[in-house]
Length: 93
Image (cartoon, rainbow, N blue to C red; front, side, top):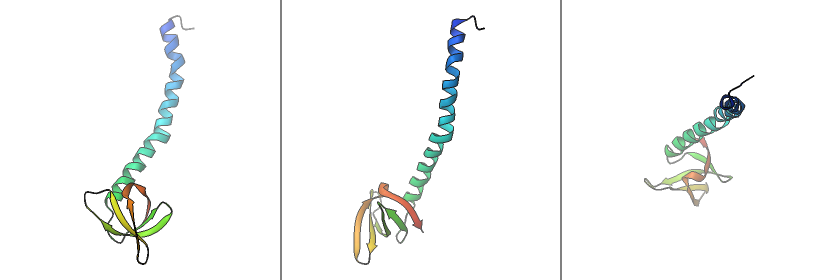
């Protein structure tokens, strides 16, 4: 069928390249888009926003500009310090 050995080897690898292409566009690319949107949403947080952090639901009490930490009130008078990157979900704004 294919007399050229180089062309024959190339044709054997085309399905593998196709599988990686499909994997990229169906799994990896959407995940990158979600991560970028989440990071943008976390950067836009302000005092009073309701968030979910490591299973705890609370509201943002204080955000210090230029730092990674936020203070979250999880109960009246109970404030915990958390990293912005640990915010799993933004419940309301």
